[in-house]
Length: 140
Image 1 (tube, rainbow, N blue to C red):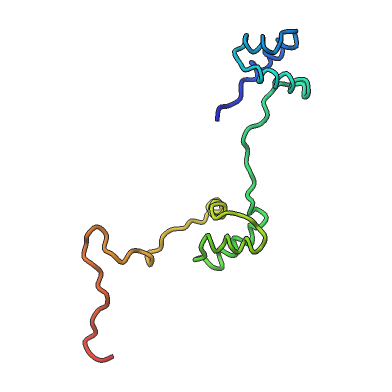
Image 2: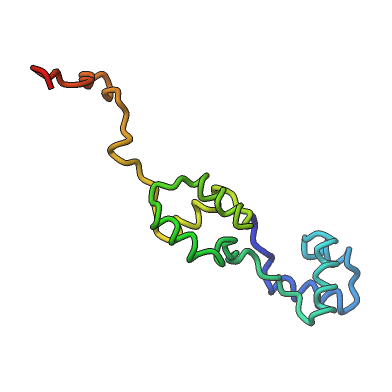
């Protein structure tokens, strides 16, 4: 997304409109859209400045109020899946997606790494196959 026009341009356009130039003429003179000039003039009349409104910003997490519970739950049961944790949150009345839970936990410093016990049974890239069981030589 593009950024806002400079404040210098906004001030010059609004000054031209205030001096009596029509919005269409000001738009043509400064090579901006007519609707843009109308909005800037309106904002100047209402607030006293044609400055752009703030863009973007930091949105709070939906899980922020549940932070302590979520972190305690993950520490209590570290092998809990994102889907299971999302389902528990829904039972608690918090509507959140699995991505939202993952993003929150990532921000808190948790990561979901594959464990060695979860590796494939197949040998990687054509190596020798793993043996099913070692044979026992004698009665158990």
